[in-house]
Image 1: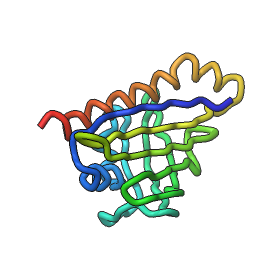
Image 2: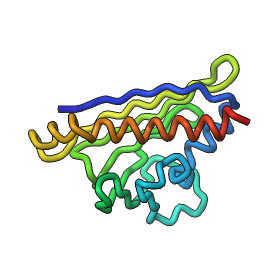
Image 3: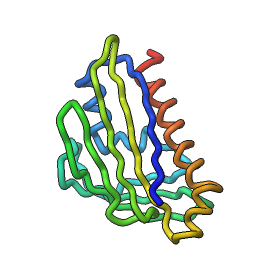
Image 4: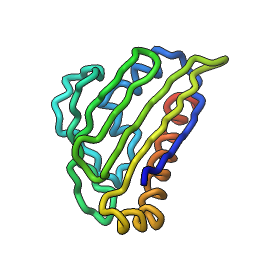
Length: 153
């Protein structure tokens, strides 16, 4: 069973500035809670993301258990959207779409995540108990960090 999380945020900035920040894989650590132990393993060389880019990292989402995660940037439309998909990692399925749109006074950013927990029935129970809450917590943290970076200046 697939689960969906959708978030929306208004950012007081211009499209190029927000795009440059969000499309730089090196900024992922800035918008991820420190307790997640997020560490990029790939050599990014300050590059912008591109279709086919593989990003390898470690995360520690639950009980100090370090997990290896590999995502691929599958689609990029400059200044509009990009998609990352898990290739290896903690989920049975992970597909994350990031949309940016110029609106009056700033940028509307919408994220849509479709995911499936691993381990069938046990995964569905784990999702109900803590996985869904943890994902929301991570996106709430990201929302607050982006507020600090762009909207509280």
